Amino acid sequence: MMPDRTELQARYQIDPADEQNSDALFREKLLLLMPWLRAFSQSLCRDATLSQDICQQALCKAWEARGTFRPGSNLRAWTFTILRNELYNHRRRTWRYSSFDDGIALNLAGPNDEQLWAVHLADAVRALRTLSPEQRKAFMLVAIGGLNCEEAAAKCNCPQGTVKSRVFRARRSVLAALNGTTKALYNSRGPIGETTHQLISDLDVLLASEERHDQTQLPA
Amino acid sequence: MTTYRCYFIQKNGFPAAWRAFESKSDEEAHDHALGLLVAFPHAERVEVWDEARLALDYSRSAMQTPAELRRLCYLAIAAAKKEADPKIRQIIASCAARIAQDAEALARNAN
Image (tube, rainbow over all chains, first blue to last red; front, side, top):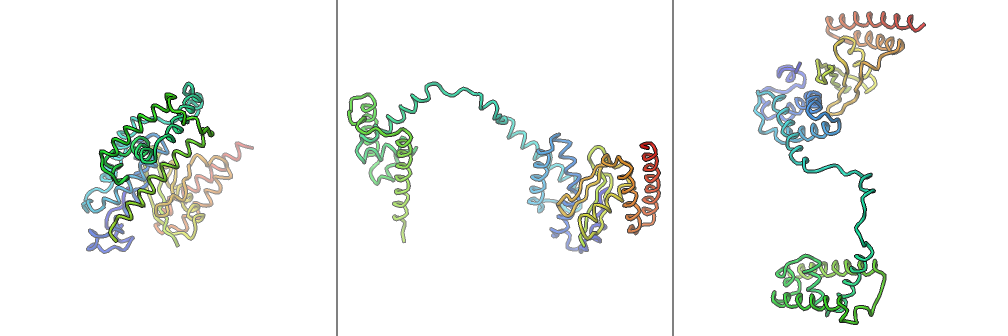
């Protein structure tokens, strides 16, 4: 059923001497094989959408690896092997995933005391306002921004030990504020959403300003 | 003129045969492929490809009414006229004649 090489050479006017380096011939052969690849993919996957995806990925990989194909060997067997391996890789990657069902997700119960958690978050944001600017900056970079002490020290332009002590004192102050021993916590009460957004935007500003600071330190 | 590739697909999904031909448009290529399909009675479907684009995927099961069979017969005769290979031309013509008979029989039964 597959056309032989001389037929392809005649049809597409390809010089046999250039065949080894000819991407055009490889492309034509791949194009001719597409229905066979589709059928093979469908027979393996038993799913129309998945089989099309696998077929497309296999074709891309075959094209990328065209340099490794030995001219004269069986291209159909070679591409079929690529397709089969692509499917194996796909199954190996996806067995641990399950599809997300919107219907089930809608019926899932939410967490208990959702409003209480929001209040706790707002309290934590307000507690941060009780800190000095240096402590607040170090605490936000380490506790909220996720930086380690070394990175935070570089950002704050101070020794690592200073950052550690600032974070320690900040934690102690925040805990004290949350336990109600600091009156400043309730000095400013704003909407919870606003305080949360304020916290996130403060962190963004801190990180962005430090990035600018890093850039300014680069040699001109 | 565009070079189209026409594949005749078996029930198992794999191509049984293929032919390349030139056509001015997708519509003309569709008609020619359908005309050629009559010469491959074991093919379940026909796929027409333009490079990597699937231009037509037509199932034989879609041809059920006498009018569709008559149209197929007409397309087969047109395809036979374009066909260079006399052997294939003869096969298409004989298959077209059989389809014409089928169409007449279907129409009689319907009446």
